[in-house]
Length: 407
Ligand code: ASP
Ligand code: MG
Image (cartoon, rainbow, N blue to C red; front, side, top):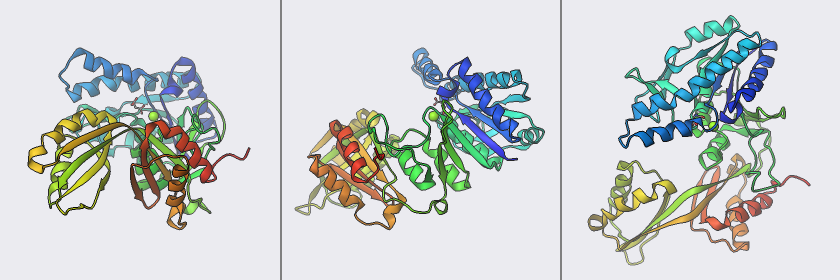
């Protein structure tokens, strides 16, 4: 007998029939004798709808009221799933964040979890009652509802699994696992049986949309055994585990891409201490995240070009912030390019196997694809390219690293 947390995303609870399918999956786990807590998202599309109503009704944005509105999606699905389970003769009840409570900080719209009180829910689980917990929501220090950021119900599930010391956390979604690359683009992409937390974190942060990056970071910290699988098929999924559970590492485990990128170049920035601090400080003050950064050696010792990337959705806000610094910092131009994409190859095997970057650069060069910016970590190499070449680059790299499915 184990204690498990199951999480179902929006497409898995998209309508009444699918919620019944979810109830059957839960029923199987209960029949196997497990203690089961379930975390649910809102029905597919509902959170978008709710969020758009908040902007439609008022131009003032009170994030506390936004949270009051958007948390309702998960309230509906948690109640409906509890009803479906009861209908199957299973003892079940819904739990909203405030009922546990599921405590977060006060950053409405993007809150972090502080602590989860598990006394009540744990006691019900040991008695055999299924707990259906509304994901995505929390209770802030002001005793008002918060949300964990879009896609945050994965994080709710992993946090609950950690707090309940669950043996497993199964994330049910509409794909049957984590793939070596997006199978809609690379037809030879394969499902990965086991992947390390670190690799999953890099892939999720670099654009693979299968898991919320924060959920992977939490799983790594608390050693929660994660599994990604589909509620639409019974195929085995992908296990996200510690590195010690994987025998031999390939140099590259997966390839991710992010189309949501924009490149900014500041021409002829004065080359003196404090300049980078001022530029990136101003962007940080405007809550704009910067990702890749390159600064060249200045040719004349006086000025240098500075290139970096931001989210494409932040570009229109970033440019005026930078232009306001023109006099203070002294640069000649702000160049913006929104037609770029970031491609990242990820694998813990990179640490011990040299030549991974060389294969990437060579493969792109052979296809005539220009690399605009490069950044690396111990287990990742990312490049920025013109976004028209995204598909070509992904397919070529997938083949070059020997990831294609044997045909
Ligand atoms: N329903 C929320 C969203 O759409 C949370 C989630 O699905 O993870 O962002
Ligand atoms: Mg999701």
